[in-house]
Length: 302
Image (cartoon, rainbow, N blue to C red; front, side):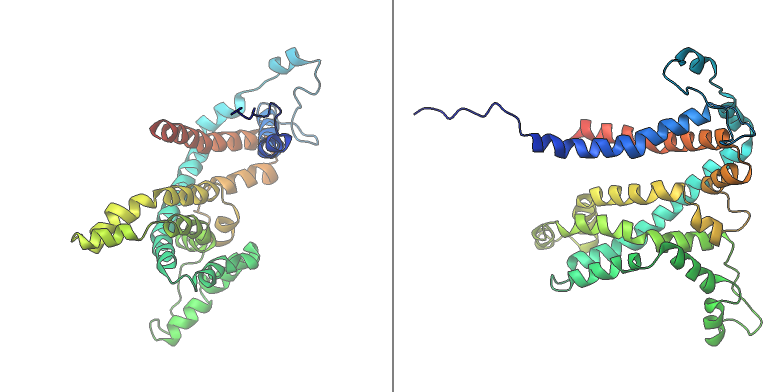
């Protein structure tokens, strides 16, 4: 019986599907990154744009390398403000991600173990906040948390606070944590739910038949199987929280130092585009490099 020869031509549609994500990354990640990198190696100037351009054409490569300026990066190591902003952003992002995991995991687990008939409704309730503008939702928390806001009124009505007492949460780090956890909770719940919903329930039944208590079955079976969702949700939340600007600016106080607010001040307040670009480049490298290393390690393990 003659074997059917495999087609020698390649399917162009398959290559198009593969090429689209790479084109997207080049246009909206690589190209903007190199533009910011070029600006970070320039000098500040009183002009429009407010920096001295380098590499304005393909014929001046030698002058491009001669005009590179690393003073912006050296200045970041001299001024403690920027290091404090980086460390504060990482601290707030880490604590917020941990709070999101502690709150989102039970929610996702309850959704995954709910009857299949009501899971779509629960999913819709998680996604429902996205139907309202992000900025409006943050402004709503101002009305809740400010000293004369709804939270103070509620606690006074319940006689938990006195008539002259007020809640002092607004313009503190606590308000920032509340706003971040509320805003990013769906991004933690959805990856966790996707991982937990696919788990084979017979594994827990087998563990129960063998005398394994529920808490031990959770740590030995449920949690290890949900680790891909935990990692995905943590990454999705931690990275944007680190560069968050809107929530710290509206809910945080003067002592709330985050790199997003520092970037905005340098770009629009001080109009120091090269220094702000250097801050952005280092922030991006600080976030991307550990992720790439982690992915390579996971690839080697698998």
